[in-house]
Image (cartoon, rainbow, N blue to C red; front, side, top):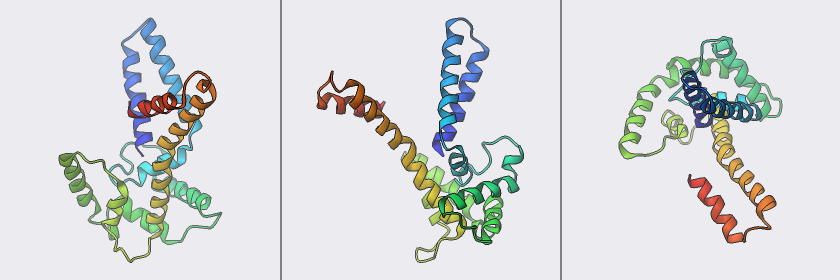
Length: 199
């Protein structure tokens, strides 16, 4: 979910910057925006969109109002992802009701919004990074089987948590080990990659 939010933030920031510049700055900002669009075009966008929607801190708030983000559009997205993750199986009938409860904050999800706000405040005070999975755990019992929406959310957050940073790391190692291997020693290759991750 952070990847999509960051893409959106960077796009909005550079779009605003583009309005007040000219010359070399305009060329540079335009190149950055084209790079962002190129990278966004390569990712599995539906998984990232679902990760934002299923993150209780955001739900549909970051998105413009269009047919993709109506309840019907979101349900179609969840069905598509369910079938993709679970080998073409149709989702359980309860998924639609549970999705509606989640988006409206009713039923099993009635207290979730208050819990999320308290978690956000607590994390800010303690300088901790927020994780949506414990927010779902707050409305479940440990021995309880996952409901369809929670099961889908767990699956999506596991993918997103592993995709952006790990793929970036592996692509860095691929670049370094193929193009730079003959110029640098192994220790320098590892140090360069580790430094890039921290920057």
